Length: 380
Image 1 (cartoon, rainbow, N blue to C red):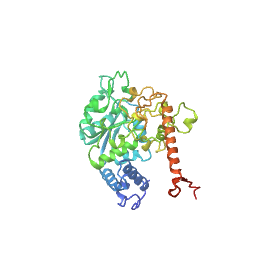
Image 2 (tube, one colour):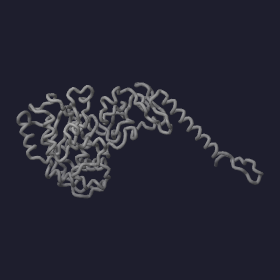
Image 3 (cartoon, rainbow, N blue to C red):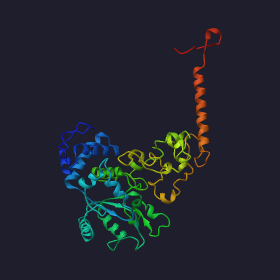
Image 4 (cartoon, rainbow, N blue to C red):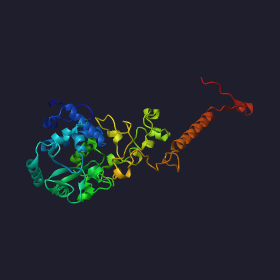
């Protein structure tokens, strides 16, 4: 039920929110939360909230068209989207935008669904979201007696922006793992188009919301990395931002599940964590209403944000070789000696600290006594 809003005094937002809230039937509190959270995800701070509110207001009036195509996938990204509640991504996609086609959640089916899709194609001027890899070998991926590859090319050509969500769409994902008989590829490679790749399996709905809002704000594609991913979301490794990083630096590792070390939240590197080679910000975005994420829940990162992770990181509980330990030149974390080596460095640091402390407490020289030590006595 819509809530009649007034002016919002918090977060630097002072503009009137009547129009966008009424237009999309979102309560005032939820709308402010959506704007504030999205501003934070985009790194805009509270100063960016009015701009986001204005962009969403304009979108709510005109409702930009979104075509969501599903190819070779398990629809996990759609599930992640429609079950989100903080921010409510479903409100953005279903109410602020016009989701004209998504075969998983739409009521239409069969010929009626195909007519809707055909009408959207003729109209053009839509944001194309693709979920799932694209079989490039004839006969391995068909929808309504047409090749998925042909459908993808046709719709990408008339889109204002193309967004690939989830690792299946960005490079092929699990369906593209060896031996890949269908020759499944990601959207960019299969269709030969520039697109925004939003990795992870499934995509984090917060990243999708922020990316769509950013496009509504700027009308352009954000700065991308070499894999076509927005740098603002994929610019640092899981390892760089991990809540267990302090344990890694100190050489404290979980050696087996169910151990006291696991209960203490020690580093999961020895249990196969691929965080040092995986670029994503899961620890900040989190899942399930921002409650937790894989490592936070006690599971090692399997690297699902990295292209080729299914084969590259196969053996999800096998440790990643060649990971440098901070402060230890030439020592890598690929061997069982990592804990011992890190422990030696830690012990050396403690010893150095002790020496420094002793030096600070050393009695001062007494010039009047010919250089003999003068006890300092207890601190008062």
